[in-house]
Each structure stands twice: as C-alpha cells, then as structure tokens.
Length: 198
Image 1: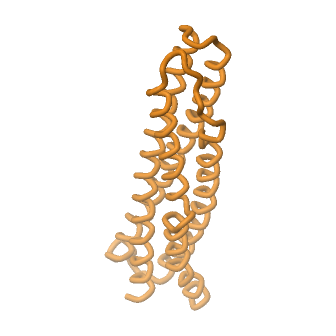
Image 2 (image 1 turned 180 degrees about the vertical axis):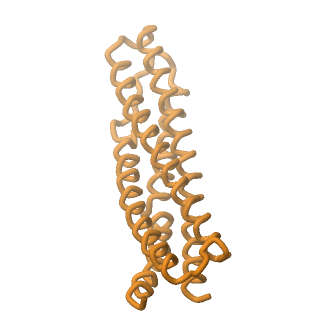
Image 3 (image 1 turned 90 degrees about the vertical axis):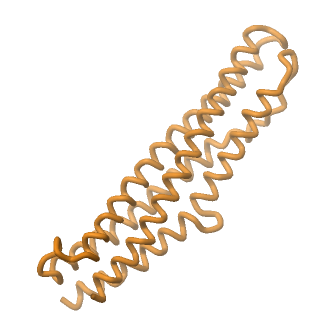
C-alpha cells in the first residue's frame, strides 16, 4: 500500500505543474491570448483598408503556428494530467473502503471531469482557430492576385477578414476553456491532497 501512496503523492504536484504550465508566463494561455490579439489586429486592418489600397498585412501576422503549438502543448499537458488522475484513482481504489461515500473523492472526480472536458473543448477550438487563421492567410494571398479596386480583390479580402474574425472568436473560446481547465486542475490538486490526508 505504501508504494501506491508514494505514487499517488505525486498527483497533486503534477496537477499544480499542469495548471502553472497552462497559465504561467509563456504558457498556453499566454500564447493563445497573443494569437487572439494578432487575429483581432488583422481583422481590424482589413476592415479599414480602402478597396483599391494594397494591404500591408505581413505574412507572420497570421498566428496559425502559435495556435498549432498551443494545441500540441495542451496535448502534452493532457497526458501529464491523465497520469496524475490515473495514479490517484488507483490509490483511491485501494485506500478508500467506499469511494462513492468519500466527499473528497467525489469532488476530485468532478474536478477531473471538468478538467478533461475543458481541455477537450480548448483543443477543439484551437484546431478551428488555427485552420481559420491559415485559411484567412490564404484568402489574403489570393486577394493580392486581383487588381486594386476590383470585385475579386474586395471579395477575397472580405473572406480573409471573416476568417480572421472566426479564428479570433475560436481563440477566445479556447481561452475560456483553458481557464476552466486550469481552475478545475487546481481544485483537483486540493482534493487529491484531501484524499491522501483524510
């Protein structure tokens, strides 16, 4: 039993580390927030351009690589979180006579569920945002192939703007899901400690 307890004692620290990597400086939240700001700037620039004007939106203004990187990092953190949940569950199976009657255990399971759902929502929104950012960049490239002031340029530029707005909206939804995930993981860490120290 002691080896299970020793393993389970790593779960709260792992959860805390996951929460810090989500919300710390340079973490997933900061990356997605930066991408969200960039997408808003692109959409604003495209909205204010006169129809005949050349756009001055640089290629690196579209943050699809940031969003894809955040998606990958969140997948890594999901795996760490899953391992912490697994060892805590194994310990609870052995240490608690009636898990369903244990308030800390039931609370822990609820927070675990919330974290898993939040991370899944965030990954889905990050995937959408990255795809829309790539499509916005492509639409803007196509718009540049038309003469200034032409219907084709205006139509493709409008499509690029709509896609940038959609990407920004999905990035904002990903931010919300990431915050929910972080909060659930922090609460899960506290409940894991309560399971270990009743």
